[in-house]
Length: 436
Image: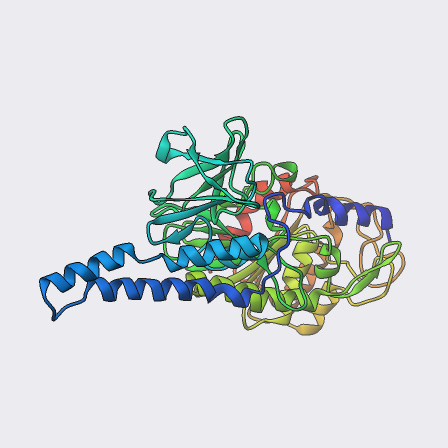
């Protein structure tokens, strides 16, 4: 079964399970998305009612205007009350709504979750540092700044990107935070996205300038966009077509269980929670994205290694909900490493040809044999899941899939099983998806 080689291929991306820019205590269900939005809508409506008061005297209009200006900002007050009661819960709830810095009547509410970083500096003050109001567990201020403003929190010794900002990027010193830009492609993120079966995690979104025609959901989200990710990351945004939205879903310590459709024995029994994870992606994550951005007409799913396996599983479980699935170095022999459970190769063979277009690839090379006669050609000298993907390619061709129409296969001879190798060829599946 080539257990040692298989384990090497499976564990490479697990090293980055914990996301270093995600707040602790992610607790809230994605059903909270609209809570603060509704508060904002009410506040805006009330302001408009006051500003548009008519059919009265000029004096009454002036009084109404003064009352509006002097009235408390209920959105700001509610957020501060929430932060004083439970910082983590309020951070996650607002993240799933309008994000941070939070839009309030007089600008944006900036919140430092580390009160020792008691100043905010950025484009708006030429990085001089503006004093925050310090409370027990956080510090805050309201500033009227432009969309896309870059900023960090500081004590004038340390300069730290806001770990809860909706919009973000990186500079030579690490995380850079922004208010949400207008008229440019950029990254956004949502914290604490969960359902009853899947623990909370961060969802990251590359938002294109153009209205998206395609959206692709990609696993191992913390490895996709950051130049500081393991092996340099995928730099996925560098390969994205202009009208394609990219949604990265972070992994967790439960990665091997969630990214596998059946159990296998790799020295211990692991895996088999793929149905729960597939349902989470298809319902919870897609529900969040569609509520925030609208629904793109063409939907795909993609991943590498076990992420490639679970992508094909999602497409198999919901063949009417995706038009494309892509796997880079996918672990298509999972189930046969130490057991005789159904592999994805066998599952697709049994299902027959369907309408979902498929991309699969690998690096590596070597001989492909089935010496243990379990039906999977994984007992030779090959690496990077080369043989299993060649076997699946042959199955798909036999089912009637057509190269460069609804099936693509690529072999990058000798390529390693890591993020740098996937970054170098991820343009291929994105181009294939963009052409559909």
